[in-house]
Length: 145
Image 1: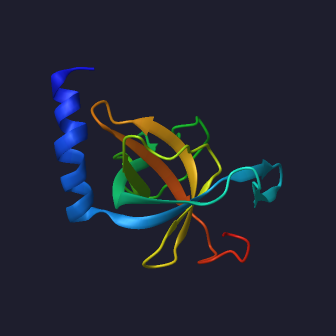
Image 2: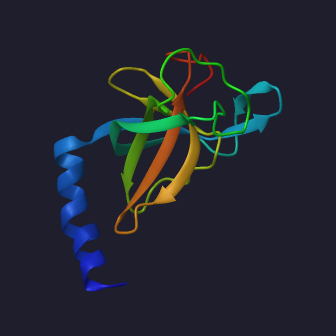
């Protein structure tokens, strides 16, 4: 490891967690095709501290030839200028060592009770792990804990 990474992990990450972090509960889930995941009995819930934020993203870019980004036809009246669709992606940032997270696992914000499903786990390139999610419609699945 580099000196910079050591300093980030030992000094900066704890300060970020103190100022912006919140308690979360991470629950391992067994993925099932066409059904909601079921809690994994081999992976009990883990309490952790994470920084939560909504990140802005642009999706669904439309081009002047009336094709969407996937190549499908798109009918639009009026201007031929490209149309961008803005969205928000819920993300959590964990200090190293982060809890073991897999795609499909659940994260519950303890303060609000909102539940999210993990879609990707990525390193931030320095000293934290970034987890992108989708918000589940249930604020507290009965079998979460």
